[in-house]
Image (cartoon, rainbow, N blue to C red; front, side, top):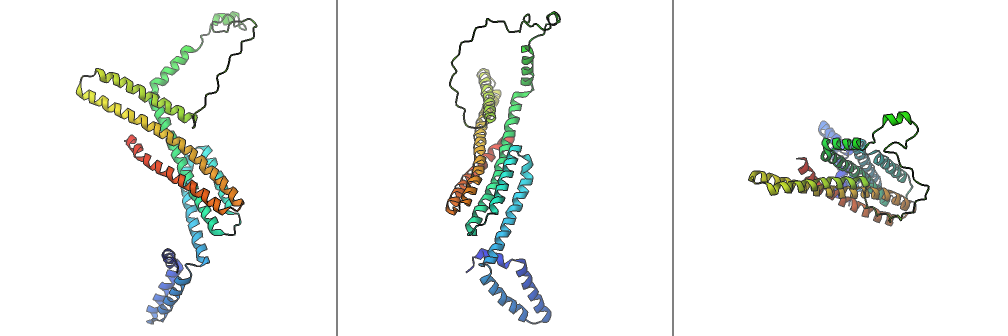
Length: 326
């Protein structure tokens, strides 16, 4: 017997509903029940055989694939322009690879169709993760600019101006090609080969984007320094209301410091997740060419599980983002 969902879907087909409505209208117009009775008999046969037929299975598959393609096209149009050019190019490569897989001839279309649909799911997740990665990077960039502030930028500009060597116009006039009288000129040294200095072993770099790591460290240093300053003020404050305000500020700064650290870790995980999706497409493409359905399904199911886990983590971050926004 056909499954209820497929039967319900077959019953709601436009041509089926139109046929039943036409038979009912004809019976009313002729005042004769034969047309509607014949239509009901045909409907029973239709619902008995068509929903489980290969023809209808192909029809449903094409409809489902068209809906997925339309949804991804809308998501791409909405999210694509906001992504970094590098991620746009990587997504374009994955889409092209997905089209190449679709063109491969497969004997057992059922498992092959399941693999392609899961790849479509991963394509949508790639766009969602890349969009969230861009939002987190933008938030870190804006937070860093806010914490540095215009006063910090002005102070750094003055420091650079103070460290710039002062030109001596008199010496430059009499000795235009001779810099040995300049205070900032390097002193002449005897032609003695320098002694080799032992080089320290290279320091292992922590995993993750260097810009993300340095930005998070700088922001957290600012919050830590600000908390230390507030603690000094709190120790000298005698007014109860001001004391309460400073304690609240201390609490908020600590929460912001923790949130920045958590966002940085998730941003690093997002980068790895995007890399995982990209690597998975290459692996599945290799396994499809090797005609390895069981291995392909097992590998892609594992990546789908990892992707769903990352999606839940991002959902858990949403309340923190809304709190900071307020």
